[in-house]
Image 1 (cartoon, rainbow, N blue to C red):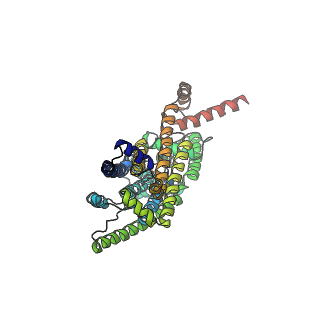
Image 2: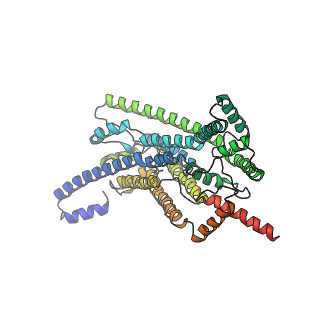
Image 3: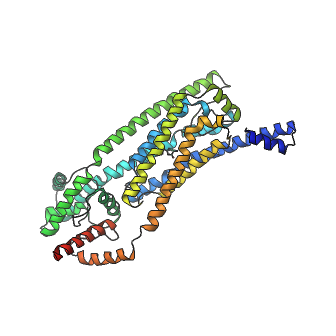
Amino acid sequence: MGVFDNSILSLWCHGSQHCLQLVKENLSSVRESASFFLGLISVIVWVVAEIPQIITNYRTKSTEGLSLTFLVTWIIGDVFNLVGCLLEPATLLTQLYMAVVRTLAKDLGLYTIITLALGLQTMYYGHLYPQLKYKRQLKVETFAKTGQGEKGSDAEQSIENSNRNFSPSSPIPLPACPRRISTGSGLFYQSARYLSKSHTPTAGSILAQKMTSTSTTALDSIQESLLGSAIATQSAPAPRMKNTLCLVSTLTFLGVINLLQQLNKNINLMGTNPRQQLVIHVGRKLFQVGDDQLLKTDVSGGSSIGTFLGWAMTFVYLGGRLPQICLNIRRGHVEGLNPLMFMFAVLGNSTYVASILVISLDWPKIKPNLPWLVDAGGCVLLDFFILMQFIYFRSFDRPSPVNLAISTKLSKKYEHKTELVNGDYCQLINCYNHWRGDHRSKRK
Ligand SMILES: NC(=[NH2+])NCCC[C@H](N)C(=O)O
């Protein structure tokens, strides 16, 4: 208890030692309970935090709004966090919390598992799903074109043919649109989102048309060149996906091994010394302990490896937000990202900080928790920034009346040439630039 607290208490108790003692005892148990409940809220919030994003991904059948690097840093950070907690003795649990902890122990690292599920989902929708969808669509279209009597082998053959022309790692087929403009990743990101929702024909149907009909040469050449650039821009994620998958499985494996070892150790400790308090770490330094235990920790000193890992975790967690912020800026919108995940993260991190600070504001007690405090506090700030991006992009990114007017004009001009995706800003820009190009060349 700090000097400030002491002087307030002695004023309140009019200097009576008995009163002082009584108030101190009650206060410390109140603080411990408050810390415990704040910590509990934090864990519960973290367990549900990623569910809204999982639902969004499932609904949109896409994970392009979420930075994969951000997810990977979360998983790496969780491993550092876990090992750091195991090595940092400031996370002892009091006997009082054991009942709750036993239940929570079953969910040990639950949010890490949920993050892993989110990671796997990202890989599925980013890589596997578009391929499956594309193949399925090709099959359906081939059947439709060649009639029901067509043999399955023919359909397979057409798929194979088209795969030769179209990179198998190319996840999202692009719609027909003048090629002149954006061949960069922006187009890839934008189109993926709209294609998953819109009725725009996919490249599958374009290819099917190319293979089976004698379509107009002008449009074909545009499509052909566009698909060429699409392959160039889209085939890049394949090795990255593999590496990420590899990294994630290695980290999970290491995490699980570590966890099992620690649990084993704890159970042994319990067996040999019933008075020994159970040490269970719930992925984060969730449960803080009373003043006396913290003091003991200070005397014995924390593990320097634990502290080092704590700081490593802090940098990884904080650094992980940057790719997400950059991705939002690069895309110019936050579609596909669920703000609830960041709101939960703010809540989870702030209740966590509060659970530590409510125990004591004294430096010797804060010191061992510093990496965890900096991490949670820093993440709150960065998540606020991301939430600001939501507000910014959602309120300032609506098409202006001028854009809408251009859009209408362009859709009329190009309806016979291309199929403009309704509301697809990227398509609009493509066509607009093309239109401008036409005008310029006419003037010359
Ligand atoms: N997989 C998780 N959700 N881990 C929790 C991460 C906590 C960390 N303070 C952050 O906000 O990044």
